[in-house]
Image 1 (cartoon, rainbow, N blue to C red):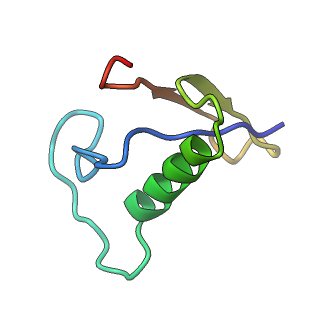
Image 2 (cartoon, rainbow, N blue to C red):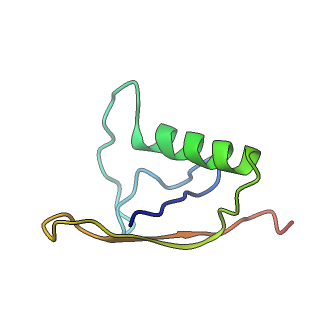
Image 3 (tube, helix red, strand yellow):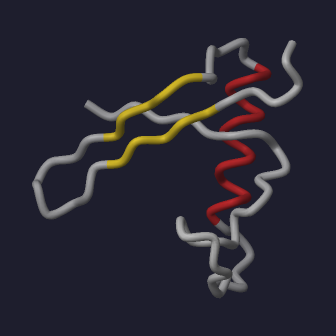
Length: 76
């Protein structure tokens, strides 16, 4: 089972590792941040509930599992 969702459209701090240190961003036409922003905006526009904690689990075990937390910042 694969579930996923993303954060707000500005994706602040997306060029930082989990320890807060800057990381090199790939200079390609399509970035992770772009795809994440598109996913959030499309889901929001479609009326999907995107705020919450999402677990992404894969088979086989060699692929890491992820937990993604999405919090809406405007408080609406």
